[in-house]
Length: 277
Image 1 (spheres, rainbow, N blue to C red):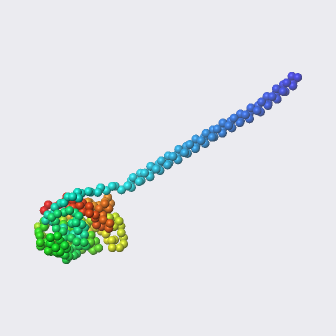
Image 2: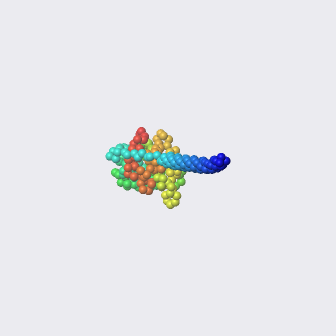
Image 3: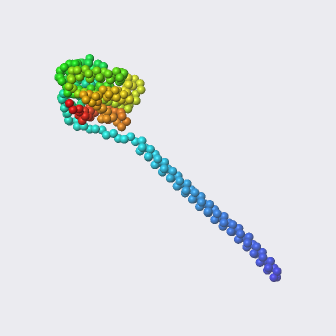
């Protein structure tokens, strides 16, 4: 009987061990799965955070580039349209741009010898309508009145000619006027720039109107000034945009001439930079 009980106890002990060990292993497997799941969750969270950071960096870079390439704003002058400024004993010799100054610039007491298409090659030959004198030549104007100041504002119609030859024509014009007006002071106005759109035309009749060519010509006529009786006045600072082209705020549709309001700016610039007679 004792022997039977001993065997029975042994068998129960063995069976108990067989049950406990798998249970422990199952518990370990569950814990392992929980750990793996936690790590996977952490990894997913980390990936999401990294993606958000990258998106933010990209957005910041794009904004910075946009700001850096933004062109500076251009301040447009607004002169008093009701003011009339007197230029007594002053002769303006010029082309269509000067015609606009006469019509819209609100200058008084000045004489304008100007017409559309006038240039340094035919300035002595052409007869022009001058208020108070009729249709007269430049010789007749100079014989009719003595002037203290003579403004020469040509150049845009001469861009198709050899520039050095045109500068020589300018000098001949100054010499010819001085022979009849020995006490006059001369002011050579720069040729105004054209708009970027006009400047960029590469074919047709307008291809000669480039600001590089205008600058070359202006350099030639500026050299004619002796700063004693002949002066050079650069008008372009009053009309250029930030890139050195005629501002579209002032330009007419052709990109060469200027709007009516621009002539008031021109007048004010002339007034501000008068040469003492």
